[in-house]
Amino acid sequence: MKKELLVSGVLLLIFSLSFITPANAITTWGIEINEDYEFELKSFKIGITDYSLLLKENLSFIVEFTSLTDIGYSYDVYNSTGLMTTNTTNFVETEVEAENYIIPDGLPITLPLAIGTIPNYLDYFGDFVNATSSLFIFEDLLENMTDYLNITYMCVYSLLNEDYLKLQADLYAPTVNDTLLEELAGGEGMELMPIPTNITDLKLNATVAYNATSGLFKQLTIKLRSLSHTGDFTENFNVDVIYGLHIEIPPTPTPTPTPTPTDKTSYSWLIPTMLVLTLLTGIKLRRKK
Image 1 (cartoon, rainbow, N blue to C red):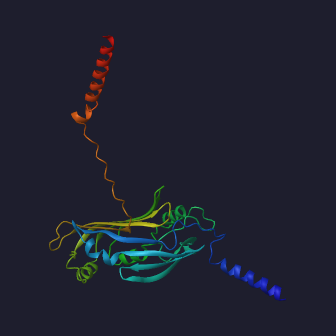
Image 2 (spheres, rainbow, N blue to C red; image 1 turned 30 degrees about the vertical axis):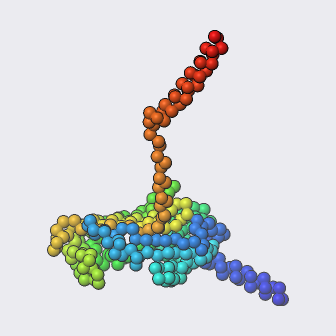
């Protein structure tokens, strides 16, 4: 009886796990645990002015993955003062537009290379974005933006090559709700980054890139182009943001200078050779005599 209860308990445990674990979960990760991955603000430009130095310290973080499982990962986030937060991201089956997809529940700092019955998850995730026209990562942000932007065009798609999986969103809004701009313009510290309160012809391009070899988040790029008709802004109002993985650039080795040939070095062999020939010729003449 005890044996039957034990077997039943094991079967129940396996059956319950099947609801949260991708079928036949064999997951391949391209990142390592207990290794630091540093992310930083690389550029934040309004017009021709770069504010990245002003914001960089507060927007630089180190991520350390603490565990990798068949369904996700846990990670710690550190800022300049130490540990900030501990989080978990799991890849679970979710219904999106009447279809079921294995997608991340949590911040997708990295994507698995393979999971369950999906041998190439980056390709699968790109197909999910194309099929649903959902950038997913920006979903909440894009939903909020519709309250402020009169969006007349939006296109979401993915591109995958041997280097990167790129998730891209392009949108156009002929007008922007003044309320949003006034809130932004009146925000703390915004006197250093002035924002006009009347923007038209807004074009936004956002790209999230993942490394195709490791699955790790590589870079977020946002490019905003628009017109302004208020205050000091009478023409273009452009914003460029680049945020991503910090990569150490090895120092360029200093090339060894090639000596410049001189008369002395070029003909340094000539004098001793002539002396040897003269000596040998003298000895030969003496023997003939």
